[in-house]
Length: 245
Image 1 (cartoon, rainbow, N blue to C red):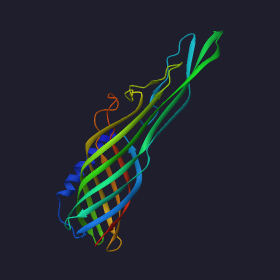
Image 2 (cartoon, rainbow, N blue to C red; image 1 turned 30 degrees about the horizontal axis):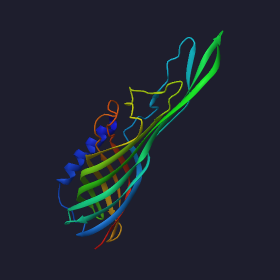
Image 3 (cartoon, rainbow, N blue to C red; image 1 turned 90 degrees about the horizontal axis):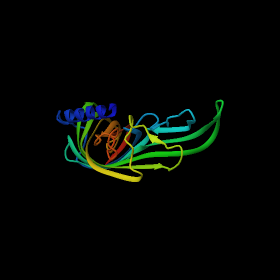
Image 4 (cartoon, one colour; image 1 turned 180 degrees about the horizontal axis):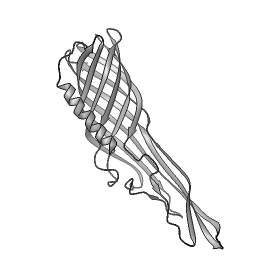
């Protein structure tokens, strides 16, 4: 939810900047660039699994649990400066994977509170996300060599969910208070989603510039309740752009 609110704010801020004044920072023509930074998709921040219910004669423990959400992300992009204010841009963005796993063991009560190992089981769920982004970009001068920019457009998002849950004892279940149980196997969900970016650019030379930025797209559905939902994502980082003058 926090990621969704942040991305909505990003899109609103992007729209506001695109409607503001003109810029002297960009020249007409083609440009290419690359970016890198921290990225994350809106999946659980901790373990996605619940622990089985123990009984008088059966004890279930989580022997190991791992979760990673957030990490390196980046993009490649190319665009065309229509004039000193506006450009159109096409890019490809890759976001850090989210990975979750759980290993659980079952023990049997053999009397007088003594427990004997019975069996173990394991499960994992991994989210992988990338997008093709089409933006309209607007720039506004701030001070000499520095301009603010915004991008507003649409991302064609592809999000793959790989869910492995072995049949065995104990049964391992996703915590549905956190995440909807995915379909078994590897499934890919795609959709066109609203996207945007904001940032500051510094013109190093006539052709070369660097930027700091935040970019993201708005997800589809709710991954807490829908197993085919697409989680929103964002990346915050720096980029380098070369203009063909």
